[in-house]
Image (tube, rainbow, N blue to C red; front, side, top):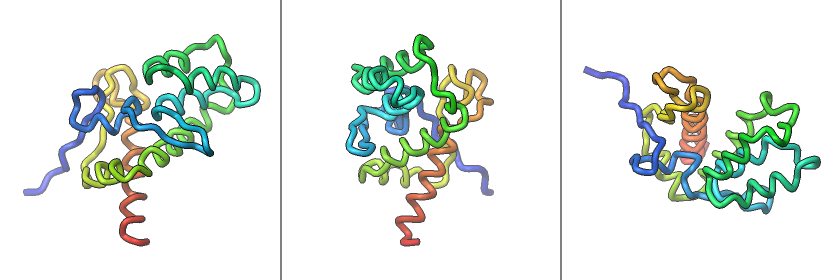
Length: 156
């Protein structure tokens, strides 16, 4: 009897696959600028690079991903006008940069074909949401990066 593969849920530091989380302490380099985590990078991209460079830098230098998220959720600085249209592309870029690290490539490929689910009870867009019925866009994008890495490893 074959059934659907058991999902991998990730969210908190104690979860076995916490490395998949945007809060995991894996930095990334984007055009020579280092970001401490995907969360730092993603939150900063919400703001116009020219008009709010200082605020973006404040987010980049935030002490923790949680602090970066708080700064990114503030509306004291306006979001860039195209944010809703580009936010998934920004997340995908961040994930591709993060998962360029050899140890993370191995981890992500090691998840096989199992569904990846961000088990955030607070976010029904990026995660599964309170009732597990969210869009899980982070998990979907991680599975896309996994497929890309699998193709690259196969030499395609």
